[in-house]
Image 1 (cartoon, rainbow, N blue to C red):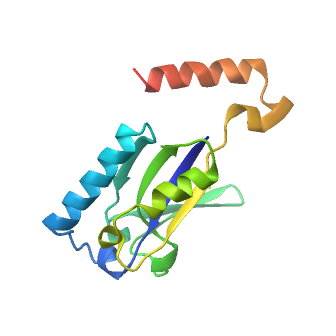
Image 2 (tube, helix red, strand yellow):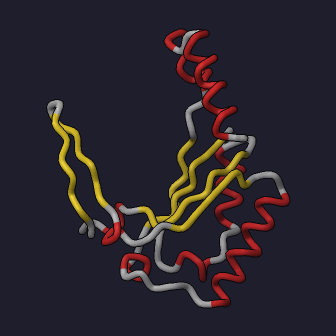
Amino acid sequence: MRFMVMIKANAQTEAGEMPSEDVLAAMAHYNEALANAGVLLGGEGLHPSSRGARVRFDGGQCSVVDGPFLETRELVAGFWLFQTASLQDAIDWVKRCPASAVGESEIEIRQVFEAEDFGAEFTAELSEQEERLRAQINH
């Protein structure tokens, strides 16, 4: 099972404050433990929303809204992609995250859809297309 693990933004991440050397070292150690256990598939920190944009779709039209965005608690400051046997395993790994690295924040865990989750609507043709795309991305 794959899980997107999202670190929610806080006042410091939205202000663009860089972490200290100690925090970076703690996070590097944590990420190394994830990688050594075969859990970590990827992950990155994100710039503040002031450096981003949202593209909104409504009624066939799209509009662009530049950041910053007001609801800090709804924003994502960084993410990991985990592969674990269960949601509980993902939770257990997140609980090991160094508290100094996330400060006053939340971490949200959401399971990633797999092809089989879509049922019969995910035809053999769509499955082959997905496999070709993944092969292209992973080389």
